[in-house]
Image (cartoon, rainbow, N blue to C red; front, side, top):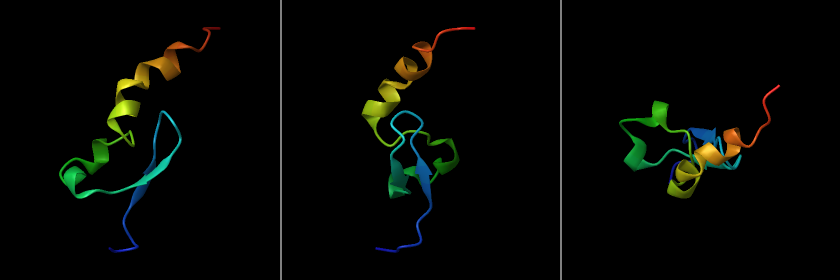
Length: 51
């Protein structure tokens, strides 16, 4: 397994995750490390109070 794969930080949990073959065609749009984080994306931004 190559060690030089690109990585990103999940917008929900902050976990660092690496490129996967299934994301080959849309790596630029990938924002979440897992399906669980993708489904919970609304809960992180909606809990902040508006100023």
